Length: 190
Length: 190
Image (cartoon, rainbow over all chains, first blue to last red):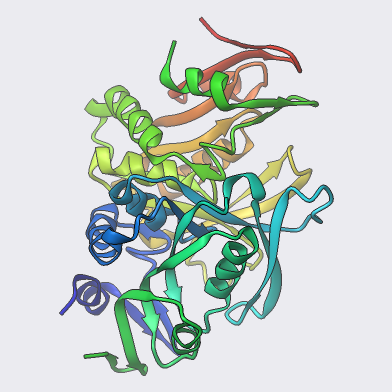
C-alpha cells in the first residue's frame, strides 16, 4: 500500500457526510517529512516532462507545492482567492465553485508570472468534484502555457472530478485514491 | 548585505503608498531555493531552542513555514481565517485587524494540534504593524505552549509592530529589515 494511504488509515478520520479529516498531517497541521515523500513520487511520475513551474491554489495546496518544487527545481505560483475586480488587466481570473462551502469565488494569478513558455504542473491536496483543479487548468489555458499534468495527494474516486478531467485529457497522478468511504470503512482503489 | 535584502533590491518594487511588492519571489510566485536559504538562517538563529512546532498564518506564510520546518525537523501548523463560530470549543480563536485590507477577521487553530508541551516558532513573510504576529502569539498563549520566538522574512522597521512586540518580550529574527522606503529609494537597517 502507498505511503499516503497507510497514513490515512492510521491518522485520518471519516466524519458523517463523507468528510475525510486529514488535518493532523495534510491540511492544517502539515507533516513536511511526509510531504517530502509525496514530492518524490510526483517527481518520479513527471521527471521527463521539463516542468518549470508549479501552480497551486491557496491555502492548503501551498505547502505541498513548495516541497514538490524543491524536487523539480522550479518556483511555485499560487492562485489567490480575490474579492477585487481585475481593473487593470494585470491578472488572469477564473471562477471556482466550492461544493464543500457552497459558494463561488474568483481566483487570480498575475499575468507576469504565468507565461506561454511555461510547462506547468498543478499540485493540490484534494480532488473530489474537480472545481478547483478545473479553475487552475483554465488559468494555464488563458496564459497559453503548456499543462503537463496534475499531482494530487488525495483523490476521492467516487466523486466525478477525476474522471471528467481525465476524459478531457488531463494527466493526473493521485497518491491516495479512495474508492469508497462510509462512517465505518474506507477502501482504496487497487 | 543579506541574501534577502539583495533580492529585494534586485526584484522588489516600491509602489506609491509605501507598498513593497515582492510577489515575484516571496508571496505569489515563490522561489523555494531562496526559501531554503532563509530557512537555514532561521535555523541558525533558533537551533538551540528545541523548536518542535512551527506556527504560521494563511496564506503567504505557509510556503516559508514548510521549508523552515524541514530544517527544524518538525511539523507546521497554520492558523486559518475563519467565518464560522467556535461552536464546539475545539479551536483557539483570536481576532486580527488587517491594516492593509482595512478589515478584522478571526483566525483559528485546532486545540488538538497546539499543546502545552509545544515549543513554538512563529514564521511569517511580513512584519509591519504586527497584528497577524500578535494574533499568533495569542494563540500560543491560549494553548499554554512555550513561545520560542518569531522568524520574519521582511520587517518594515519604520512601522510599529516589531518594536512593540520586542518590548513585550518576543524574540524576532527578521532577515530583511527595511529602515525607510520612498517611491525612489529603499534603505535597510545597518
